[in-house]
Length: 195
Image 1 (cartoon, helix red, strand yellow):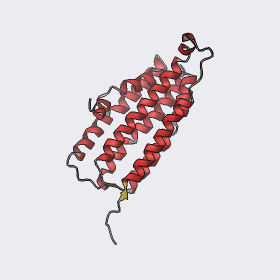
Image 2 (cartoon, one colour):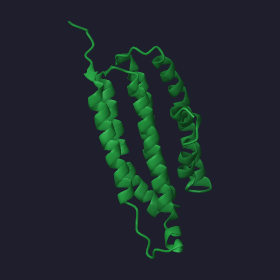
Image 3 (tube, rainbow, N blue to C red):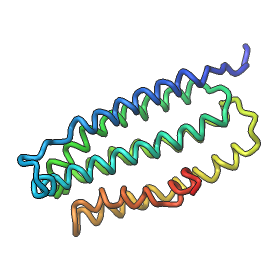
């Protein structure tokens, strides 16, 4: 029996991720409502929709950037990496719907919790990507260090998610969205952006 590892072309998966995330980000803007009156008060009335859109857009953008940094360091991928990519894209495809729900019912504990769980599930798909590194072909000596650092930073994510959901149910429902907003300035995102 041959135990030789079979590698797949990473460019196909990268192209699929790029295309699907671009479509998802476009769908976000299509869900924005028009103000009843084109006045400052009319736009202000839609502030929750604009906040939800902005948050989701930049969150997806940072997810895309993180994935591109990962894929830039590898030459080929294994089948587990492809499956995790498909699961992540499935969850990300729900983001426009979750954003619309959160925009329409911004102060609902249940809706905010669903939004937090949905976006959290997508973020959690990054860890298995890093775990599948052992089946990827790479030449970069810095990749294992990058993977270790990113995985360590991702361990903080469940703690902040649970804190946001707890505050959502006890004090202020949009805390889940503000938790996600604060994650945009977390060490994970700052290191991803290399600021």
